[in-house]
Length: 305
Length: 286
Image: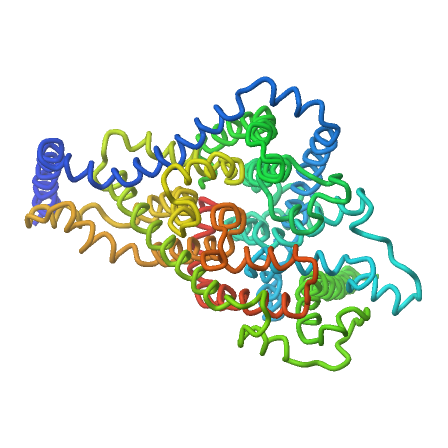
């Protein structure tokens, strides 16, 4: 028996299968397109009723020029814009850079590191609202844990964290980093695990250790993932309501609002949906380029969602 | 110094640094959680005395929460039930809609699959809070004001895109030959979906179901805006109301917070392997 004899039955089998598959696909377009429609109908309905309609309606709500005139003449608005940019620029970048470094730390072997990882993941696993309420109380100038500790150890009054705009904004950013650092560390940890060990061995042969290893091996490989994560995280953080709302509540004197919280405040506390929507829409010149950049990166296919 | 001792020294230094980093991480991670416990195990008056260690630890605040014997906590267990109901329905809805859509795109290979994928991607990158204002008006128009289903609908909408990505990716690991064999035996698409495809998708279903459940359990803004009466609100909304009341017994608030935070923690650690698998499946293409 020759090799060809072996191959022949398999090949004919494949041909049969291909013909059957083609027949299936043809039949699909005839009788089963009804099935296909039934399968996708729920999502199409959800998308139309709960994405397209709210988006269009929201744009319509925020389409009156008068809303923008009163928005831009609001002194809080400029402050809010500044806070939003600060929150994104500092919060997202510090968080992701720390996550990248920490993911290296968690690559270390040993059960102690594994145990630490279980604890480290807690801020992400615990629901946001209780922990942000706890941080809010922790920062209480009189009774909070931080100032109590300062008083106990140094017999000094701590700063009024939430009554000073800059400290309150800083506190919000730190609380936000606390909450989201574990999530991104896990993502980067997975990215690092995917780097073949041989690369590091080869780099070590060439004398790259420590910082060089990070700069010439880890970072170039992780760069694309890091960029996509930065874009995605910036987009999500732009819509972050809870950190600001529960840690500082936008105070003192409305000095720590971001666009997401200001929009809700204008719409529901002031009862002016048009004004609230205008605040949200004024974030679109930032949001849309970020989305386009992200889509382009994803389309290249090196990193998948 | 010989290179060997230098390497040895470096390793020692590295270990010492790791211990230091580990210790700092531990303090950083646990501090807000410690504050939660610290306040919860004190009496109402002790909370306002600046203790960094509970002087007389007591579980009385937890007893109050369990018995609902403070007026702000009168509906606590009912609200836990609301959170659970919404979480379960969001998980079920997300799994149902996400799986049928992914099946149609990846197995039935419908022509407009790319359009649906892009629609999902678009939904994924819209910050949910940006649509809160129109949603509020729309839900009223749909007759769903102060109704749990309004929150369920919104959360299913925002959870489904992630489900579609994960399902589509996981689905590539299931051989098409299975579908074709079933086809030859005369199975309908529904039978292939329910008898062959879904059972093989189990790990992805667990990952996405857990994700959707936790997303709904933790969600605040939409539950806060769309639900209003004490009978319909979820626990985070109740906690937020509690926070904004004039007189807040913080020990009750923190005890209730801890009770509310425990179920997702248990679920998270129980399904951690699936969750991380789902995440990294989503995060990185290996």
